[in-house]
Length: 282
Image (cartoon, rainbow, N blue to C red; front, side, top):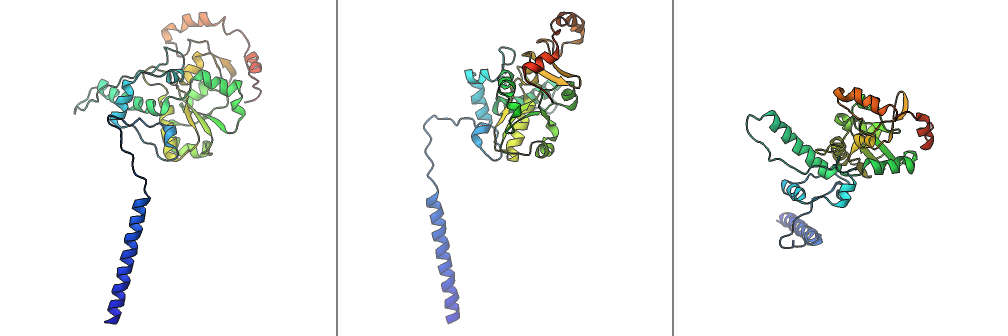
């Protein structure tokens, strides 16, 4: 009988301690501030979320964002107007059982555009040029440029000092090619279309947040297209060169006429460009 009472007493004491511990945790939690009448939650940004998995906008947050006009700061990050100003149009999602190719495209475009709005509006090619070359950011070990285009695109022309990471293989390649999770990474894809901007850069920025990168992740909004159209230098196996603005991806039917127009413009030697930028060895 005494033994039973002893066990019962221990159990009662343990239960009492557990209740006190749970109560202390409840009181330790900060009280949530009541929301103001009519207030809406601002869409989160990748930078504001800090370390940890990313959180995509809800449908309501996206719609609230689409209704607002672009701010001047956002416009500056997109490159030269009006060529690279992103279109905020979001089509209603088609849900029929038998979707047309146009509906399939628009559903996919909506998804890419939502990612671009949240993760992809970062810096214009013009501002990145100032940082990378004029301020010699390419020499800073705490700043890296990741080129997210395909291997064929990268071999045709690339920004000096860039590191290629395949968008589809980013989870596997990033730990080896971008091992420092604390430094600043600039992300580059072809980009620059008014409809979608630098979508691959936005996709990889989201992946890097999910993976735990804690440094700044900044997408070059108008991408490689903006870099070329602004007349900035690129390189390939033949060396350093600049492309005449307006001649990037000229339709084949217009190529012959364009060749006659640009030939006199590209006469200056590439080495003069290299000297001006203090580029000696890549």
